Length: 165
Image (cartoon, rainbow, N blue to C red; front, side, top):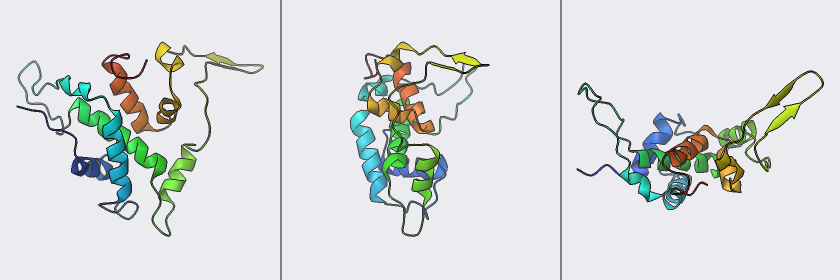
């Protein structure tokens, strides 16, 4: 049995059910949904298709995977990140513009903060090796929850194999 592949219809369902974006803010069949999805399909490494999702737990209980495979989940999350980054608002609405402002998606970030300090406090976080090699696209992905989920899926199955080193 072959695992279900990500589809535009599946992504449109993801947009409404997972991202909770209403049809008023993004009409069904919007060109932005197609563009975001096609871009994600072109970027997500298809080798993720070999990662199996168990259909039952150790006790034989059927698991509800929501119909997603690891590959489909990666494609849909990257497509969601793409959508938030460049979808245009419907006339008279400011949904995407407001979201981009809240997430500072248009602000330049050249890297991840490694240390911060002032007179009374100090914080230092370990920066993982993969983050040292992030591309500008990876840094932009870090700004949305969907982009972070995509990066986590891609990294979970081998950094050099899946394009993130």
